[in-house]
Image (cartoon, rainbow, N blue to C red; front, side, top):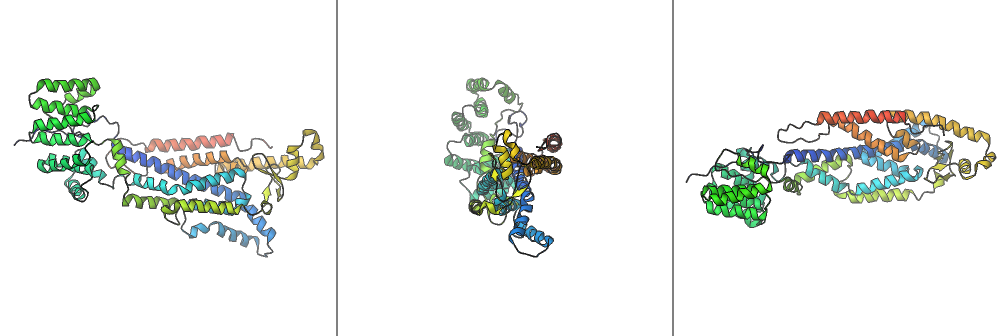
Length: 495
């Protein structure tokens, strides 16, 4: 029996498939966006920890010298504490644990805002196992669950090896209806119609509410010239999803082959009511009669790629190791809460054991006060802030001059540091929110320049080459950021 003429959605992709983006491109863009956010977060978190270490490391040295009777030279003490600070390096830890370690050691020196920032970060660490697990599935989109083979078959780009791999997979996973449907499409193209029909019966039995399988079955039966049965399956598909033109189109083609002109016109009218432009594009095909396979939609493909897999778990482990390390991502919840517990325990040490630097005059002290925002001030500066201007006479004049002098020096110092690493100067003068924003912008711009926003690629040729534009965007972000910190330093006046 002569098979009926067929056409796949790939052969008419430019005029039939109205999707504005193919699944591999969408999956690659989504994965790249996730990886960029992940990398920016890790880098910014490390920069926050580095700035805290730079800010408070001198205080740690000062307190050690004060409470100890060691006769070690300053160089030896500095080297010892430097070794303590880089301890995570010997544990094969990622950059995040450096920040956690530094925060625990220096917790007694940190102000209220910095403590809240670190606590929030540690809570995020507790959720990082799930986050990297999600990323692992995005990273391996093309190598799990035969996603690539299914897509290539639906687009008519399959090779014999693709079909062979899919056949092996379907034998082991007969309940995977999407894979069986894709294999059936390949078999229909090869003319192995009986096997295709058998597979499609299984698909419909496993998922009777999916119109895609009824449509493929209708095409297989039409190829066998069982047009009445094919029309019935096309009608079932259209009943399950009455807004899809392809099912009405195939139904009209089946009736046209049976010379039911009135029925064929009725379904074409329905198509015209739904989408006149697309109806015209479908009818303009000069191949007659033709049937159109229904491709899997983006949402379903994304749902499939996000299913659990061994490769996805392995990729999640690699992503975790790159940012965190030390232990497996499954322990992230316990690791996050354990680090939070150590951070809170460090707060039990009395605050008067730690050197504080007055945010007004720059003098160090052990006993002092704090501003409303939680920044340390010495007792004399606290008196200035709490007394009225008429009572300033009780403060010696050189104290006021000292405050002005410190403000002038601090302005120059922080302005230079801000140009070296945007956010560092702001962190040193307790402008924590500004520092965090600058660290995020700096990390985002730098990574865009280095990577072009691309960590993984689509496995199909694409005209979308957005790397130069993203690199240019990253460069523009850094230029504008440096101009901003130059024109608006952390301290604009001496006081």
